[in-house]
Image 1 (cartoon, rainbow, N blue to C red):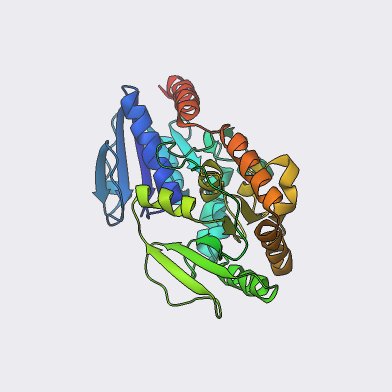
Image 2 (image 1 turned 30 degrees about the horizontal axis):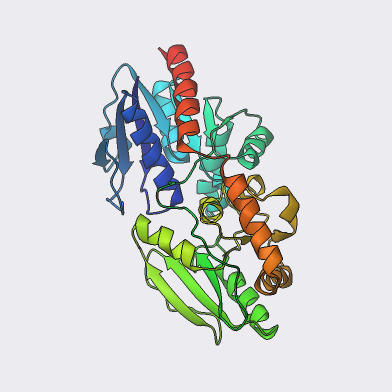
Length: 336
């Protein structure tokens, strides 16, 4: 198959990581793969396939036998308009209308969701969202690198030692709700827990929770990210919306429990017997109480760690490779 992945400015984040892995998988399976990006080069890592940077979709040359995978609403709307809906597959990793406040951008996102073209989503949550727009979709969840994210033989948090909490994402990102994470940690501190906050970000920030020591990791390598996960006691996720929640999977693969909001994508990831750690968005007290339980109850922490490691086995890039190639091949046969 000939396939071109096309999207607007790709940032150094989990969604871009998944796109690059899709491209690499298909390339290694023997297909002709291109990645076209509208905007500047913001990759923190490079795929093994050809990458083209353009300033306009009009400058993208599409081969007559090339299937198009659109990575956002803008590419989906533009390329379905030019090449038809059968030939363009939307790869949806977020509830895109929620990403914008501008009315025109929200309208563009909703328009792309209503297109009748084939759609791949990364979670049951996004499949349900598409269903509300009257469209079906095929779920292909991402995975994480087993060579990077793996557990070490370790014990639950020990009394007398700081409780290390990892928070990932930009303070300024409206959907990440990092101020709520800080509020939950300040509440946890008032409960008597000695906290060390570990922040994983793309660029340096000044904001920190009050009277809590913070260690920063700015744009680390993937190998460093794996080491960071293994160095902490818990991951805290306070997002109001996530398409999947890759940091949660990475934490589980590293043997680290998590406390997360019910942000949509997190629902697929939480082990059934610890659903109490799936918190309503904005419930700061419940976040703090869930963290407190993990900080003081060794048996609870160890149980969550074991359950997470078991649950994480459901996701692998080998499964992604099989499902992705099969689905795209079925679309390819229809399109050409």
